[in-house]
Image (cartoon, rainbow, N blue to C red; front, top):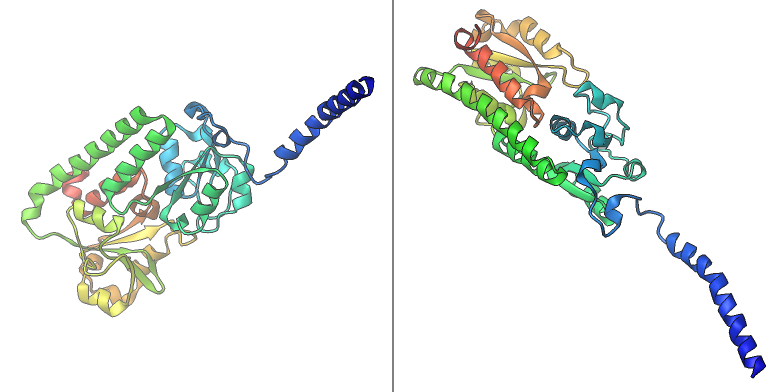
Length: 307
């Protein structure tokens, strides 16, 4: 009987001694899962969410909702507001560094349609929550802001921001509408000049031109498109909006439009209506699109919009 109790006592001691080792082994089983709130059963406190943005437009939305302090990672191209450039970089727009994303342990990743094929599935496989913003129209931009607000506990702020943006859009429409009984000015947006790139329909820039009371002379094209000098001359835009600050382009498209001799006969050149415009204000699907809309409207109808 004594031997029985002695063996039992030894077995219990061994079990107790080995239990901590087994627990350590379980914790080390998966080293790829980030240590974030979403890895537990408890929902993270939205006020302390750690957010990663995979696009400059998403970054602008996040800052506009007052969540700048929650951003723990952005792309190398996230340059607005200036505080965005101080955030940790997780790669490029289309070249996301997965390990850097994991390293900053986000609770929420805000992606785009560009990331749906490979990046988003991999992030979700690692236990991260991902929402995707892929707006193709101004209305969808507003909807995306509401979606981010809902995911971050900023529903009220998002609704207020969207209401302010819609108010500015409506103000432009109200001023332009009485002018549309006459001929709309033909407008060309120059994205780049060598080769010549412009925008057709199904782009935010096209929509802004139309809302501002202009007629995109390349509306019969689709998306971002390449054209040639002869076609530009034939279409004879009355107003040329040329991209400024697109990548390393600076104001090269504006200089080209003003100095290319073969464009000198265009109405836009003869009337001095070549304008540079910040590319981010008319192409980046974020809160500043309404600012871009107002500028386009001022260029098209200066007597109405410029005091």
